[in-house]
Length: 73
Image 1 (cartoon, rainbow, N blue to C red):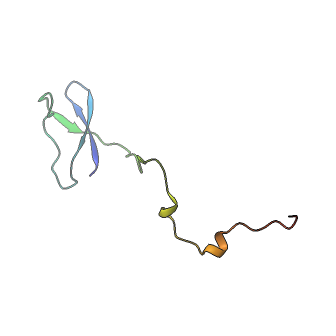
Image 2: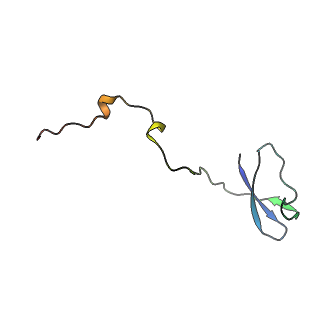
Image 3: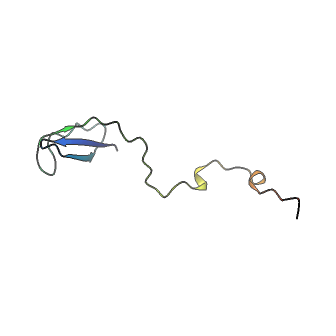
């Protein structure tokens, strides 16, 4: 679900996670102040994991992934 940024009457901002199909908030759930949804550029992709793993990629054949033997040994 996307995170939307809202601006309270006093100018402070907060983020709120809601479905795209939900209507915008009219009041802050914490303070009860009137709010409006802020237009932001978005954050694009956010990576929150520890990284990518070998299982995230297409498997290659074992012959092409084995290291080549050096000739001097």
